[in-house]
Image 1 (cartoon, rainbow, N blue to C red):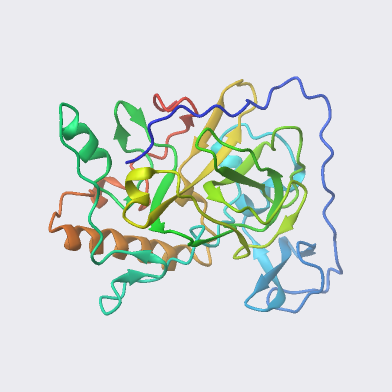
Image 2: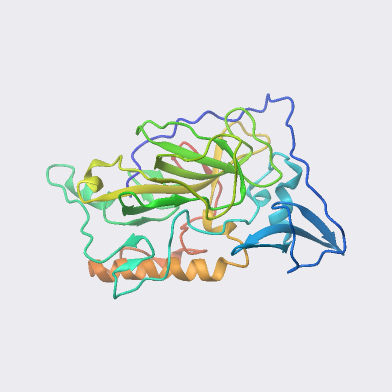
Length: 314
C-alpha cells in the first residue's frame, strides 16, 4: 500500500512502577441491559453479566459486555492480543455501504479515482504500492508486513474516534502530521500512551488532547494530506490500528483491527468493508486486487501478533 517507513514510537517499557488505574463506576444491580443510564462509561453487575453505560444514538443505555469487552477494565498489561477488548464501533471515518449512484462508500470515494502511476526503474514496485484505496492488514509491501488498515480519502475528510476511551497520546509524526491514540475504558494513560491503544494515524487538525475522554463517532481530526502523490489527486490518507504492549516483551505489538469490532456492529461493519473492496475491484476492472478468501476476518490477511518494526509477525 503506502507505508514506506519504520515506526519510531517509543516502546512502553516494563520499568514503569505504578499505573493509576481508572476505577470503574458501579451503579445499582437493578439496572438491566437496554435500560437507560446516566453516566457514560459507568458499569453495573446484572447477575453474571457486566453492563456498561454506552451511548446508542443520542441515548445512554446499559449494554451487556462480553468477556473480551470488559477485559481491559483492570488496566493490567495484556499477556497477548486475547486481552484486547472488542469495542471498535466504526472504521475511523464515515464508512457506509457503497452506492453506485454516488460512487461513494460513505466518505470513501471510489468512482473515478485513478491511482498515481510511476515510470522508471522502480515503476513496478511503486505502482504495486499505490494500487489500493483500502490497504489491508497483513499485506506484504516491500518486504514489510502492514500492521494497520489504510484508507485513501478525499482531503478534509473528518476522522472520528473508533472507540469510547481516553486520549493517551497525540504524537507528531515524521510526516508532519499526527496520530491520535486512545486507550479503552478502564485503562489508565501513562507516559507515552497506554498498554492498549486504538490508533488513528496520519491526521491533521487534532481537536482532542491527552487526557480527554472521547466517545465513538466523535470527530477528532481530519485525514492527512502528507502523501504528495495522492494529494495531487485531491486525496488524503488515514491509517487505523490496534497497538498493545505485551507483558514480558519490550517490543511494541499490533493486532488485526477487525478482530476487535463491537459484536453488535461487527456483521454490518464487515459487510460494508467487503462491499467497498468489491467496488474498488470493479472500478479498476481487476478482480485480483484483493483475496477475500485469504482474509479471516475481512480486512486482515493475518491475525498473528505483529511486531511494530514492520518486518513480520510473531
